[in-house]
Image (tube, rainbow, N blue to C red; front, top):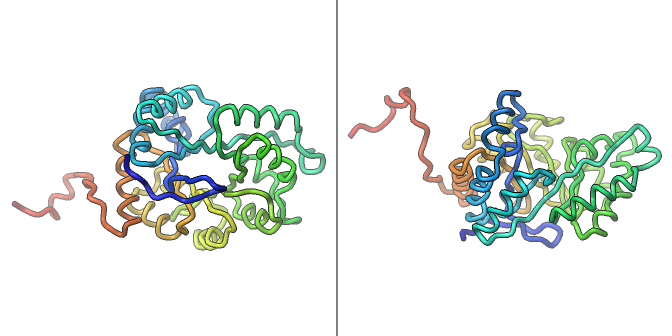
Length: 286
């Protein structure tokens, strides 16, 4: 098995390329038609397993997902059986937030039920989803409110805590308040897609983060071509940081792996370019 470059997070060795799952489960961030296509064609046990197998055989063994999904759960088992590689699971559960949560705290019983299920799914990392984290990120008090109540519950279940966020402030405030987390998930792409601050600002905040950052949406949900998107993120993050990317086929998985390895080695990857009639005038003759 090949060995993709790795980093350490919370005492665990992770591949710096992380398998994303939006393009496996039907979250295209594009159109309902594209979501429907993914759900009908890609969100199927064998199709997902075939993609995961390519990543696993290349040493990309880290996967980010909500794991309460039967096709993904079964496909993960198949890919592990085929390759002998055990996936390192990063779970992003949604913890229920109400108007009373900031002042009164979480419904601990419900949170414990969700965390028990997350641990039972085999999650190594538990990083409350953006819909939880960002709802509690308070610009006035400069803190992620009530998250300190949850993190010990994550650790008690043997999982490593982190935060998933779309708000750069969440990383800054977690660092300032010494929140007991080991890593962050943050949107980062050269298009600024879904980012709440300019790209250069987010780049600086990632560089200054006190813990490794798992960047997501490097291709802006398909709006950037891999050559542009991957060159940008790999060349502007730290050696401890990671890039999360989803694909819809084994061939796409091979392309992003090969391209990423070439970028990290500062060598051009030998990847076949897309052929169209308009390229004929620039191709060598004979």
